[in-house]
Length: 99
Image (tube, rainbow, N blue to C red; front, side, top):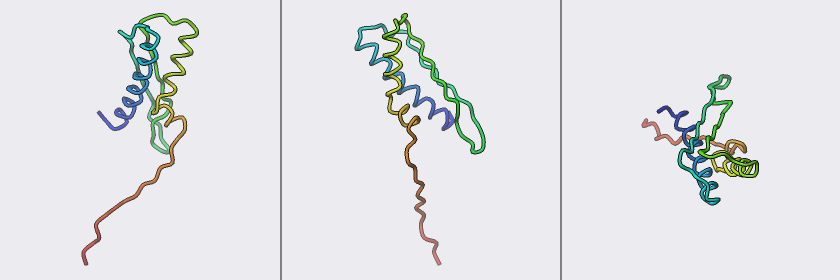
């Protein structure tokens, strides 16, 4: 897998974890739960954009559980990191050049 694929997989795993916890807590079936994460590669600068998360549940959900599941997966730490971008810093530590 490429680094961007690992990145999207991380988001999918996080969303899936939160989805399972939501369903299990409410004694709803999780067998057959599926998470799909797709995105576009864009340029200027090169990056991942238009991330789409699809959650397929094995059971029908009423409006209350539909909204609850959406809130639960939107609370995933990776999702929150992307919707509230972190401060980033690059630091290069290199050995001194011998003279």
